[in-house]
Amino acid sequence: MTSRNLSLTEAHDLALSCLIKNGCDDDNARACADRMIEAEGDRCHSHGLFRLPWYVSGVKSGRVNGHARPRLDRLAPAVIRVDGDNGYAPLGQRVAHQPLVDLTRENGIGALAFTNMYHIAAIWPEVEALAREGLCAIAVTAAYPYVAPAGGIKALFGTNPMGFAWPRKDAPPLVFDQASSSMARGEIQIAARDGHMVPETAGIGPKGEATTDPNVVLAGAQLGFGGYKGASLAMMIELLAGPLIGEFLSLESLADDGGRGGPPKGGELIIALEPARFGDADGFLAHGEILFRELLAQPGTRLPGARRFQNRAETPKTGINIPASLYDEIIGLLA
Image (cartoon, rainbow, N blue to C red; front, side):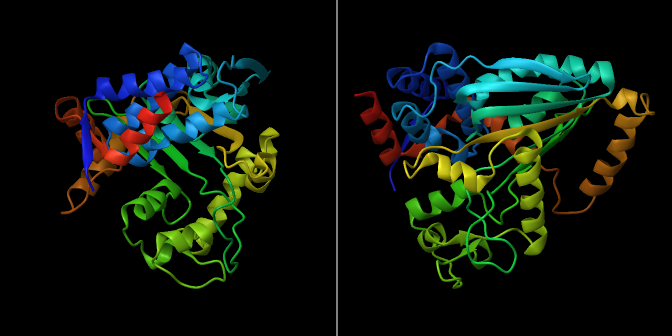
């Protein structure tokens, strides 16, 4: 498969121009482009420019508001809600970041209910940004029904990722972002595009048959990681990012799409914690480092997210490689 090398600046300019050309204003386009290139810079290609045609399709169909103006309300002393104005999540997250930080420092804990928006980005940037403020953070969001419940064969839950971040004093924060499914949806889509097989644990075919063919999984249902354990976490996230905050379940988001094939509409719940207000203001960072040192003392281990930070240091010099077919598709969207 041939590829095209782009600098991060070139990739950002390409994404920004494409979004503006197809109906986003500068604020919305820039927030989405920033998020995609953050992912590319970390070499997480399944959330980078690979997503750009999907961003564009939502705006061109009229389903997503490319001129969204997110609105923030305070629902309780430690709870805020952002109405995304039917736009993509990155701009609303940018609007909500500092109010959530202030709320959390005031109360020791803060929660953000993010509604009426489309979240198809990576989830680690929002929790990492909070950890860089010295806070702990957890985030969850849903999707379309892609994952079968334990014992079932019909997709019901989203891949339903969860993100977590822990601050560190003299190192990048500990950050992980993982789906509750065995594989992220984008990873299976890329495997199908590139002609690779997937593990048998990734999913099943339409009749519940075992398969390693990503195209068969995409036509059938994905599986939770660890069997029923991942499926239980997917169910928990459905409830936290859906009924708790008055937003769609994954199956309701699919019904709302009505077969148009656009991005999923739904919600996100972010919970931030101020460690200094939990009883060990002077010692929590050093205490956490004991765990990290013991973990890293074992050969073959690494902290979650460490590879992303390493990639992030390299890609400004090396640039990124994207498939030539994707580059041509993006150029076509600019035509």
